[in-house]
Length: 179
Image 1 (cartoon, one colour):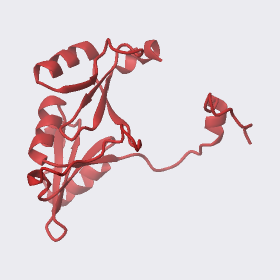
Image 2 (tube, one colour):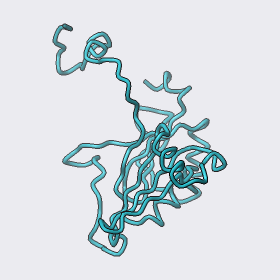
Image 3 (cartoon, one colour):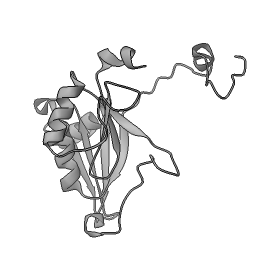
């Protein structure tokens, strides 16, 4: 067993690896609750360039699920059953859950996890050029939490979706210069 680590420094890489096993499962989706599907679908498709893979309605429970990912539209199966299985088999899928009627409720909002009580933090989107992506986001009126040249971690940004969830914008090839 790995030796205990001081709380101030976190785990060493060896200690972290000792806590892990090699599982068969893989991450498929992250679910975010959304207030207004029109605003959220516009944001994730037009602004972030994702593709709507599947929409599922649950009328008796009064909610809908929207599955989005970075996939080619031509790859989406036409057959309904194949489409459902295909959408659930994608890696890194974003599931937006809309409880019907929330779009008309002015008091309705969801907690992003980035203010007290803290919890969920953000999702990350990889882009080839963070500054160019952020210039485009700025032109589209996207709300920024952090621009690429702000703060101590230069070269990455955080934007917000219509529900206030944070989205990290990063270039995977530049992360070694940031961390």
